[in-house]
Amino acid sequence: MNLSIVIPLLNEEESLKELHHWIAKVMQSNGFLYEILFIDDGSTDDSWKIIEALSSKDPHVIGIQFLKNYGKSQALHAGFARAQGDVIITMDADLQDNPEEIPELYRMITQEGYDLVSGWKKKRYDSVLSKNLPSKLFNYAARKTSHVRLHDFNCGLKAYRNEVVKNIEVTGEMHRYIPVLAKSAGFERIGEKIVQHQARKYGTTKFGMERFIRGFLDLITISFLSKFGKRPMHLFGAWGAMMLFIGFCFALYLGIDKLFFHPSGRLITERPQFYVALTAMILGSQFFVAGFLGELILRSKKDRQNYIIKEVLNSKE
Image (cartoon, rainbow, N blue to C red; front, top):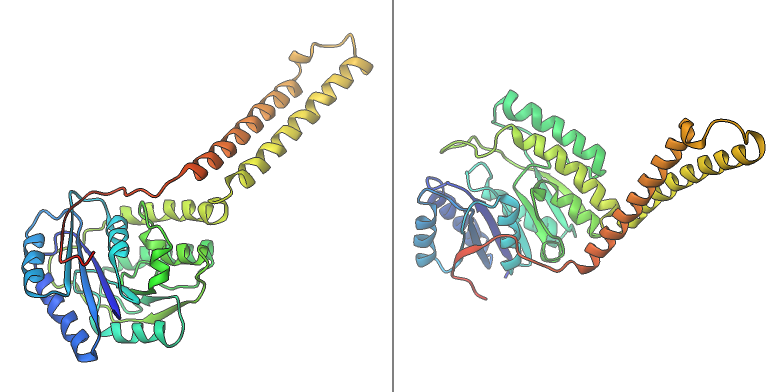
């Protein structure tokens, strides 16, 4: 199979038939062997009924329905787990991503050797204040922090080699940072393509301004995980050793001073250096414990699904 097209969605009943027809037209005109995975992330409208109807008529359509809304990252994770194509395409269901871009994205993966190609919506049709400006600031911070040189981390239109999506775990709200996760996993051939962005045709966006706040918090998380996620003791142990060393130096100073220089002076517990030493040693011990716990959790961690699928249609597994 050439292509798996993974489409997470929430309450997009108006656009699904048109999107399916558009994708099928592009696939057939290019002679691709393909599958379309619609992942219904707990929609409350008739999205699932439409997916059922499409699946019954088109064997290329696979429908995955979540029991409730778990978020875009979980939907992508479920789609990645079932995707069978050599190249995986992700796109949004709101018709703002253009399926006509897929053949070129496929070519860049298969012929130019990229592991991942991210779309760049250079010209956007969103509100300047509510989406464009915050998005530019967010992308700037993401580039500087992650050192992945992409202009548009939030673009839903991306292409991946199959090996990439099978070797990364998209959890929480990390869907914005899949390129960073891929780079951390060793897939460093990351490209970018300017893609056409279209104005929303139906409904309203499901994301508000809070997504940028969560995005920055996730950026801090992923920066930590990319550096120390597999070796937490390297971070916490270093801080713990430094704090214990500081505490030991202050304690040694107090002991020598009391024994040899001012034996009849103030009690050690009345001197501010005593509390510096005590605090540093307590913090150092806590850092070491945090590092040990992190290592234990890392070694005992097992793959587990943190979403519940209600129904799957046309699955080939």
